[in-house]
Length: 151
Image (cartoon, rainbow, N blue to C red; front, side, top):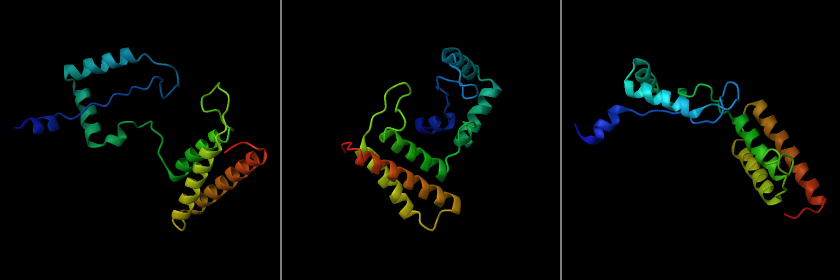
């Protein structure tokens, strides 16, 4: 068996390196968990082998606590970025807001392009949400322009 074939048959290991526990949001001890995972992997325990096989077979199910990405959540993410650029939400909690009308305008244009390109392909709720988000962002942008904020 060639080296390439041997590498493919061994699979891969998925390690959760987030600093906070997804269940409680509390900081977790990553060193302890990583050592336990390494020990389990090295020992060749059946549990480690099962986890590896399921991760290899279905990589998207390995992180079952992950939020499903939908068109609506995608639009909300883009609108949040626009709100950050409009100074409505601080980019980093605890820091002052910053207004960047150029970035806000670009994000509004991206949302408008998505509205145009997905016309006729969205359900009523998605279409209405996109319409409302665009209206709200455009009104906020116009208000900031009227106040004299530079682009």
